[in-house]
Amino acid sequence: MRIIPAIDILNSKCVRLSKGDYNTQKIYSHNPLDMAKEFEAHGIQHLHLVDLDGAKSKHIVNYKIIESIATQTSLIIDFGGGIKSSEDVKKAFDFGASQITIGSVAVDNPALFLEWLQVYGPDKIILGADAHKRKIATHGWTQVADMDIVDFIRYFENEGIRSVVCTDIEKDGMMSGPALHLYKELMEKTKIQLIASGGVSAIKDVYDLKAKHTNAIRYYKQPLLLDASYLRYPNHQSITLLDQKEWESEFFEQAQLMDFYDLTRTDQNTFGYSDVEVVKIRRIYDYFMGDVDEFAREHHRKDFYKFFSEHDKRRGTDFCKTYPELADFYHKCKEIR
Image (cartoon, rainbow, N blue to C red):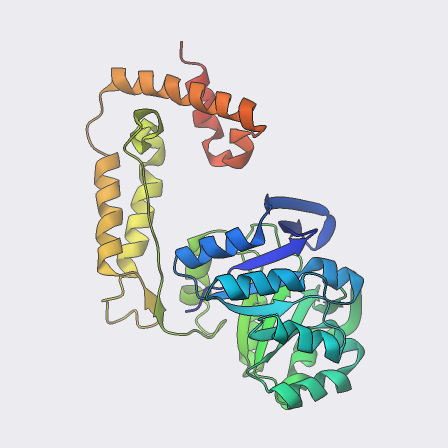
């Protein structure tokens, strides 16, 4: 399986939109290069880079960001957004993109799209097929064509396209899970290599794409890389501050999932975790469930609140908004006197 993170660029920042609405942008990094380097440091090899400024402007805007990532990382970049002319195509490749994703031109000028496909080949050109209620959305998702997504993909498949990036806009940025039924239908009705996009919010979504809808996505055999870091020290940030009864199931389920997808299992021949990582997550679980000095833990929880409340004041951040799953725990620590 190949997991490809995406960086959406707007005003030179990494953002996330909800359902493609530019008014809902949330900035999660001010430096796309740093974000790309972080992905690479965790074992990622491929990156989907989207120029949202370009999509609105109808020409590539953030080509310098392509260049910086291409020259300062080893990531294989698939670039999209704002590619409307042959000059844009050349610029994207010249500045470091290995592949380009094109959607709007395929709708507005299919002859030009097919010309690029013939010149550069299907290994370089990916069809962008983003759908809003099954209709193809273009121009940064600001327009919707009266064209069913299956018919759209079938047409270009017959013309030689091999790879398709598909996003169900209703799922994009909503963190509510991928459009499993749509992807399953596409794989049943076409033979393209489908890159599913949008809605994936947890490792469970990845398992669902594989385990529940085996034919929904085509995979490359490779290991899933995971660095399950955890803190022992400082004491006021140790995972043992969490309530065991409330969090045991979270740790246990993760350990079970990783054990099931152990790369050494003969019945899991598509992807999985190395045995070293499986053992590590078990150790984390055992450490978390060990004996705890309740008096000391209360003291450290009090320090936890002091540290992060002061951190928020100095940085202008909000711990509970950044980590909503820990909001109840944060307030519990706040109440300790």
